[in-house]
Length: 104
Image (cartoon, rainbow, N blue to C red; front, side):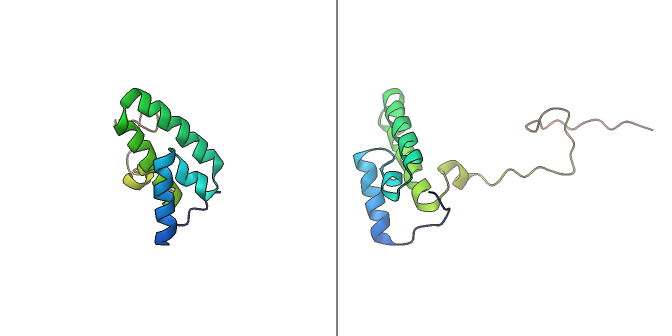
């Protein structure tokens, strides 16, 4: 469904954007990605219930971005997680504490 290709046609982008006004996830629904459409619709209604209009707008913006670019807002804003190969860690992948090297 989501092939990762960006949509460059302004008319298609306008239709996708307008569909977000009707229902959160509408842009994915128009694109044909039912899984993403349903997920964004459910999250949109939950976000509106808990956070009001800002929550709904954030989910709708994520849905539109996902439909147009194939990547979510979080993926757009954050570069791929690249591990630093020079630093060993003592804990899981998220740890930033360097491991002490054993002395010979």
